[in-house]
Amino acid sequence: MKKTVMIVTGAGQISMAIARRLGFGKKIVLGDKNLKNCETVARIMTDAGFDAEAVEMDISDRASIKALIAKGQEYGEIKYLVNGAGVSPSQAPIEAILKVDLYGTAVLLEEVGRVIAEGGAGVTISSQSGWRMPQLTPEQDRQLATTPTEELLSLDFLQPENIRDTLHAYQLAKRCNEKRVMYECIRWGERGARLNAIAPGIIVTPLAIDEFNGPRGDFYKNMFSKCPAGRPGTADEMANIAELFMSDAGSFITGSTFLADGGATASYFYGPLQP
Image (tube, rainbow, N blue to C red; front, top):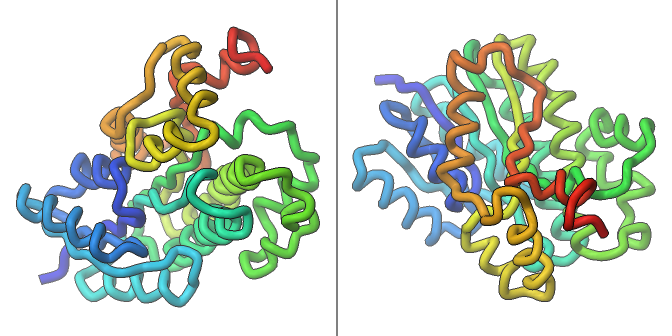
């Protein structure tokens, strides 16, 4: 019996929260580079009544992405994508951040866009970080949006010698995510599907805890203490936004990025977080 298929990448708290919110009655194919962690999440979801299957998947590798898609197609049409895969500035060097968060996301959106079913929807998790770096030139933004995926990492301004540190690399990757969503939503639209992004602020996840305990821990703690919300967010709050994006209530929304950071970006430009 064929089922509606949801591909979920990144077996983290945000991905799981969205999958739990929207995955009932669907076949959830969950991909992550850490198979053990992926299997744990799939088991938790299965024990809660979902139909989830864990697959080892490396988002920085096109063949691995295509294998995940092929696994999903064994069960039916792929109608939903939730992309939460990525690494943080404290977890990886510049080259890995660009390969995983920038290139990998671009390839995933491209490959899923080739097969997404009519009426389908996707959401990718970006970050507030892409909103707080200095503006790129219009040409650089266009290059991030439209450069063929296999040429992205060859762009001059993405060369490691032109990137200050891992945070700068992460900011560039997340800016690229949002530009690729705008570009790919056109191709998804040709198949009758929609694609959007969420740019979370500080969300309490294991990745965020790594940041709290990393070299920029005081910076992040200061950020959420001085944002209007006065606290970090939760994965379930991001699932609220994904539910809108991926339901009929969001049928007029595509190519958009929703900034959900408790007002931290506003505070950075116009409040007590101003540098």
